Length: 622
Image (cartoon, rainbow, N blue to C red; front, top):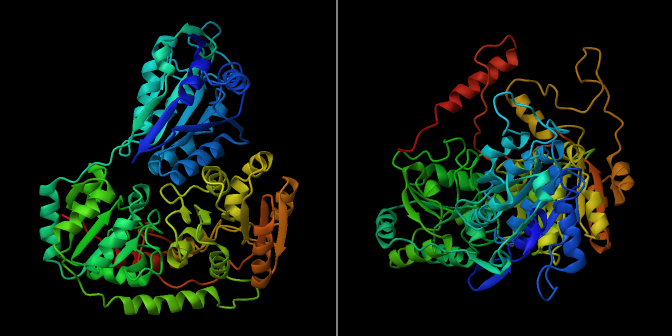
C-alpha cells in the first residue's frame, strides 16, 4: 500500500487493539495535536484524510483528532485518559518541530514517572539536510544527527527517530510493545522528520491489519508465595499498603476478600486511594508523610509490611521513617520485579489480582487482631470536624474539600496534582470507588488538573469530573478549558484562590525560610513580596475563555454552587477564596526536605535542629 509516512502512522494506529480478560479496546483512542510547519502536511494531512475517507475497508474506523491549546497539556490529558483506562488505552500527541515538540517534555516526564502509556509524535529536522539549518533546528557542532528531540531520550521508555520510511514498521511495532507492557510502559517517543512525514513508500498491507496486543496477568511463582506466606504466618502486627497497581489490575475485589479473611489493616498510597472504600472495615486511610495518623501509627509498629502495587515513594515511606519496628520485614506483590525487590522484600512478581489470591490461599485461614478499628472510628470524627470547622473570615481549604467530597457521587472523580491539596486530600478524602480519586503525585505537576480532567472525562463520559485546582496551578495552565468547551466536554472546575503557594508557603515556614517568595503580592517597602495582594481576577479569566462561572464567598455558597455546576450542561468554574494559613490535622509523619546546615537566620537555625532530630529516625531496610 503506497502511503506517506504520516498516513501510514495514522492508519497503523487506528488498527491497534488491547485485550485483557477477553475485553478488547482501541489502544490509541485518538490523537491530540497542534499543527505547525513541522507536522501540518505530514501527520496533519493524514488525520484529515482519515476523517474524510476512513482507515479500514468498512470506513468505520478512524483516528479522531482533538485540537489542544498547549502541547504539555495535551500530554497530561493523554496521561489522565490512560490512567482512567487502567493503562489499557491511551492517546497519541503530535506537535510541530522545535518549541511545539519540546513543550511536551514535561508531559513525557510525568507519564514515565507515573508509568502511564502515552505516544508522542514530535516533528523533527529534515532527514535530507537539504535546507539545513532549518527553522528551529538546534545546530550541534559535534554531530548532525542531534536535535532538540534528543531531550526526550531519558524521559521515554522507548525512543526512536524514523530517518527513512523503511524504518517505520519496526519503530511502530516496538512502540506498541512498550505501550502495552504493564512493567515497561511510560512515554513512547517516535520522532518524525518533517520531510519524511510527507515521503511516500510502498508499505506491506500486513502492517495495517487489525492487531491485538494481549496484556498479560503474570502469575505468582508458588515458591515465592510460600516464602512470603511463612513470614506472614509468624507476624503479629502486619499492615498492607495498597498502591496504584491494585487499581490498574482491577483487583479491588481480591483486596476486599483478602482483608476480610485475614483482618489485616489496609492503608493506601496516593495512587492506591479508593482501592478499598474509605468505610471498609479494614481501611485505615493514607500512609506516609501526608497520610492519616491511624495508618502511620500502625506503620510504625508493624512487623510485616505487605506492599501491593506500590513503588514506595518517599511520601509513602515518610522518607524512610514510617516503618520503625527494628525487625520489620516486607512482602511485595508487584508486576515489576524492580519494585517487588524494594526494601529487601520477599518478592512476589505477579499481577496484584493473582498475587493476592495466591497469598490468601497460602495463609490457610490465618487471621489477625482488628483492634485498630477503634482508632479508625476516632479518626473519622476528626475528619468530620475538619470538614465543618467553621473557619473564618475566609473558609479553610479542608472545608472546601469536605463540601466537594460530599457533592461527589460514588462514581464521580476528583482530580488534583500539586500544592497543598494533594496532602490534604490524602489525609481527608473519603473515596468510595477505585476511580474516584485521581491525584497525580508521582510528578506532582502544577497545571495537570484541568488538562488531566479533560482526558479523564474523555475516557469515561458517564462520570462527573471535578478538577480541584489552586490559583498557582491555574495560572500555569488553564488553556484546556478552551479545548473542553470546543469539544462540548463538561467539567466542574473548583478554583481555590489563596493568593500564592499554600503548600510551599507552609513548607518554607517550617524550614525557617519565612514563606519567602510564596505569595502573589506587590513588592513592599523591604522590596520583598510583602505588599498588598495582586488584583488578579481568575474567575473573570475563566469566563473570558468561555466557561460558566459561579463566584462563592462562603461554604454555604460553595455547596449551592457545586449543585448548580452539576446541573449545568457545560464546563463550569466554581471560584472560592480560602485562607492559606488555615489548619489541617497532623499526619504525625515527616518528609525529608534538607535545611541549611549554617545560616544567619534564627528561624533557619531552629528548623535545622528539628531536621537533625527527625533525620535520626531515617533508616535503610536491609
